[in-house]
Length: 102
Image 1: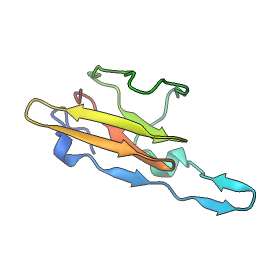
Image 2 (image 1 turned 120 degrees about the vertical axis):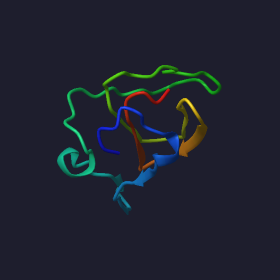
Image 3 (image 1 turned 135 degrees about the vertical axis):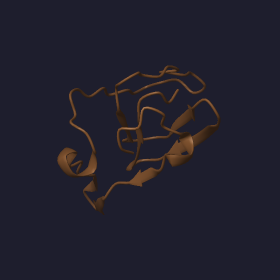
């Protein structure tokens, strides 16, 4: 996404993470240095959110986010000053949210 202070939702894209599935289950390696285009400072893990309940609902002035769906479904509703988009992530999918995207 770059360091554009005026990011637009039309530039957001879902990333399909490389995965390996066999009889033992699913393995999805996340290579922060290769997959995430910024330095990861901290990581939050969200789980057991009831259906229909929202988390987040805010934007960051300088924080970049790389949201990964590990299991279930994650709906990301993103907007800028001109447009809105909805992204439905499944297991092994991710999206980078730059600063100023609500």
